[in-house]
Amino acid sequence: MSKINRVPGYMQSKGNRNRGPIGDREIRYKCSMQNTILDVLRARPGWQEVSGPNTAGNQQQQGQKGDGDWDFYWCDREWLHANYDTMFLQEHQKILHFRNHYELTRKNLMVKNLKRLRKQTEREMGKKEAESFDFFPTTYELPSEYHIFVEEFKKNPGIIWIMKPAAKSQGRGIFLFRKLKDITDWKKGEYQPLTDPNREVPETYVVQRYIEDPYLIGGRKFDIRVYVLVVSYNPLKVWLYRSGFARFSNSRFSLDSIEDAYVHLTNVAVQKTAPDYDPDKGCKWATQQLRQYLTAKHSADAARKVFQGIDNIIIKSLQSVQKIIINDKHCFEMYGYDVLLDANLKPWLIEINASPSLTASGKDDYDLKYGVLNDVLNVLDLENRLTGKEKRVGGFDLIWDDGPVLADDGSMECSVNGTSTTANSFLGCHCERKKQLREIYTAAQALKKTAVS
Ligand code: ADP
Image (tube, rainbow, N blue to C red; front, top):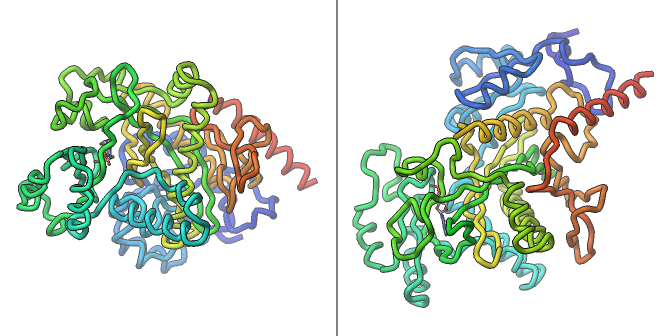
């Protein structure tokens, strides 16, 4: 048997279950991060870290020998960009990120792709159907759409806009404004970071309508982080994690001080620099806590609508790039969606991250991130422990598998093509990870035994 054939779960079709259990050979992984993901990988039974320079030359050589030196690589985006085009991946290798993930994660491209699919939907299915895309605030790319923006600006005097660098994160370079004059200053270059040698000249920004009436809890604004795992774009296959968190701003919300980042930006990177920031609390609520709060304060139905709205955002946004993302069976993506609720409980898509922060801001945050990442590995299933038919693995629920996935227990009502049905989506619902996983593996083992005998 060749070396590669002994890797559990690889090189065999899902139908062929008569391979050995994990332990035939260790699974070799690489990891570019020094945070929670490394802890998860190191604690995983039967997985072995491989070191060595992460250079394209090294990878190419290994590839040419016909034997990659890793089976799983949690790489950073920069590494993928530098190496993907010259890399030869073995059948069994898995790597984080799709080649052109930026189509969804750069703020300007995300909106461009969403606008295109909305237009197409309106053309083919009518205005009503296209309204299901009204979940992103009016947005223009600058400087290219400056003139259209100015027209829109003049139509809505007095409203607040937010300027964001298209390719930055953690609240960097963001500012709010009411007057066109502030943009004139920006145009002159006042807001362009001069220290960044990689910046585009002029740097691309998006200008976006600011959501002036966010839903507040305790007078504070928050946004919701949602974890979504895409294991294939063609066909589209999407898993949604039950847990996540709401990130609160440290100061009470007010429109009087639009220059105050502690009031308006909910990024942890921003909030943790506030003088009264409490690192133990970390300004976070678990998504379950938020769902419970909304249920108690409004109704179960109102809370369900909020989370159905988030499901819609996830699916529509992924569909908007489905034909554009270079699909590759070796690639997967774990997205961090940022969603804001307005005072009417309508969810708005703020942005999608392909490298959501995996650095924990406290113990609960660490446990959550550890759980998500461990379950990412469980879904990817390099050990080949699953049957391939699961709708739930740990905290992840399969919500789209080339079409909507329906729940078995009928607990979540939704509408698919006008028919009332139940979606397999449980964001903010209770997450009994450990028990559920045990059940899945026991069932899978039993199935395999039956298949062999
Ligand atoms: P970054 O990539 O720098 O985090 P985001 O687009 O996520 O940029 O914006 C940072 C924060 O600013 C968000 O978490 C949210 O609190 C706030 N924000 C961004 N866009 C809007 C908007 N259109 N309306 C209201 N708040 C916004």
